[in-house]
Image 1: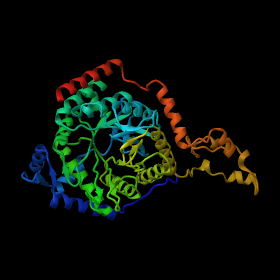
Image 2 (image 1 turned 90 degrees about the horizontal axis):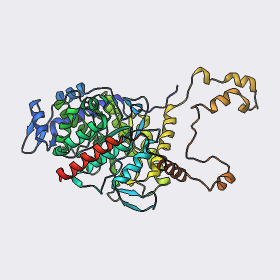
Image 3 (image 1 turned 45 degrees about the vertical axis):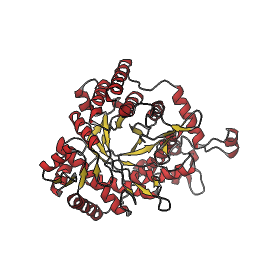
Length: 478
């Protein structure tokens, strides 16, 4: 097949990024607010300034960590039918995470998010064929702050049976999360073997690591939970204004995380990722739905591949304030670039306003955008059965191919993408149908999903266990 792929970085550019990265790690250094991390690094040969909390990491140490990190593993799922091997020959998607607001599906009002919004969005995402991994789409603002991420984990476990990935913020939350994962999968061995759940880890740009979060993740290493490293430097504010140097910074933050996790638990599964942004140079606003963000995502996917690691990215992101053409344009441009460069998973479904506003119908629209990107990436099938020169001999100049057997066969094949949300009726038929749009069709789909029973629910016993663990966390962590 003539697969449609893209290459952004040349081999020499990848080498340059790697060389610049090693220079940053060794000469500028990285600030770790975790004493455990500093001690691990010092014992392994890094120069550590405990006063400044800065470690300067020798190139050999960074390269050793990259060597021992696993090059392939499977992201399991509560339902094994959704297991997803990494690296993947195709690109699939994840719902975006912890937005602060939701556009209420029933009233249309924009309000602060609650855990019930996670429940609804996860049920919609469960039904999306392009989605393989789930984040908690919004912050559970109605739950106590000290246990909030655990409640978000609870929603992800209960309402989606695909691979679940989220974060915790303190070492005190770690035992509760471990207990929840054991309740979901039955035993510690199953948690380790299945890898149905993993962690998102965000360094703090530029070149810093939050102490409590890193300590919590080191603790979760006992369960061999995979970690997806998600640096988020914003070109012009928390990162350099040039895209090339911002890519180098994100790469350095990736490596500075991988080193610590590999020192603590050698061969713990790592996923190389990124969620960069830019600044609107006219007013200082953060921008996530730009061509530049798509380009940085694509370049960093290629760097992950350069290191031989599973490689994912942010994408399908939009700064638009409301659903419509602005959102679709931004999402398409930020999904297509990393998809063409072979991102394993693109994170971005369902949210607008620079990842801060959840809309249920946007989850369905984004699934359609993903299907279009997929069709483009799949390219042109040039196998012998698709060579129809014989038909030309039969039809002759001026004929019509509608009567050919090959046309009937290919009409039902994957040669042509059948759009799920776009309308291809005549104008009169479209008007008679009430002038449906991509978003009105998506809305109908959401209504159908929410009216149906929960797909793939956990057992009542598991639900009860999770609720008991969360009640305990609310009481004890406060």
